[in-house]
Amino acid sequence: MQPALIALEDATVTYGGIRAVDGISLEIRPGETLGLIGESGSGKSSLARLLVGLVRPSAGRVLFDGGDLARQDRAQRQRFRRDVQMIFQDPVASLSPRLTIRRLLAEPLAIHGIDEAKAWPGVLDLLRRVGLNETLLGKYPHQVSGGQARRVGIARALILRPRLVVADEPTAGLDVSVQGELVNLMSELQRDYGLTYLLVSHNLKVVRVMADRFAVMYLGQFVETGPAAEIFRRPAHPYTRALIDATPRLDPDRTHPPAVLYGEIPSPSHLPPGCRFQGRCPHADDHCRTVEPPPTTLADGRMVRCHKPLI
Image 1: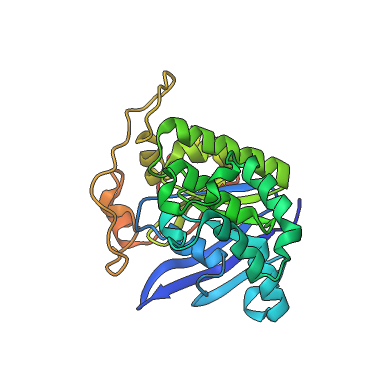
Image 2: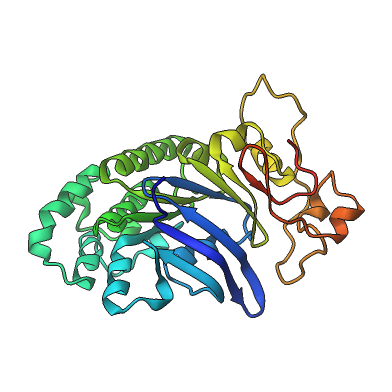
């Protein structure tokens, strides 16, 4: 088995005393796609920003290629910023409205001291590779469609030939047909450029197509991790099952009535006692309401944080 490209060791991110990420350990191996799923407020975006170095852990470590990010020298930090890139959820908001598409694509080259004239043929090739043409180069972000803006964001993220790409809700707000095109494009780029992905999404249909593994997050913790196909077929945590059952699909082999996810995710500033999901779980009892479940490894190797796993 290949060593992890990036790993978290008991990592915590705290904002004003609130643990958005609470003691997470994680490994992503080269060429793998990890699907990070959960509702808004679960901590997914904070975890994504931790992995790309936009926030520092309040506790624990982030390791890249086996090295601790907190101990990197200047040259190592610069290399990390080339190797790890992010595709943002709102591409138009993440792109400067004052820069044309050409300048947005050239900006990463300038930041890293790469000769634009020498690199530009490769930039144009990448632009065509993501399904865009040179006629867009003189336009501004607000002058292109949502799907085109996503493709610009992907091209900008790949300009420096990164090794890890963190994609935060890459298909949110797009028509179903455009979502499919984007998923196919990202899969092709992964194959052609040897990319590793962290795919952050609440859209399980997207995650299921691309992910090798799932990590299901709730109130700052992983409640289930394991092979994507197995988790989608037989979820072990009630929260995972409710998320999957909420995904529209035709499944004549389904043997249970769809699980319904009642209520809203609690505020991380007011964590419930015991299991964090107990207030919304149809299987919760007094033990669940008073004792926090530890992470448990099931017979098939997946991790689940539940007193009453469904398998």
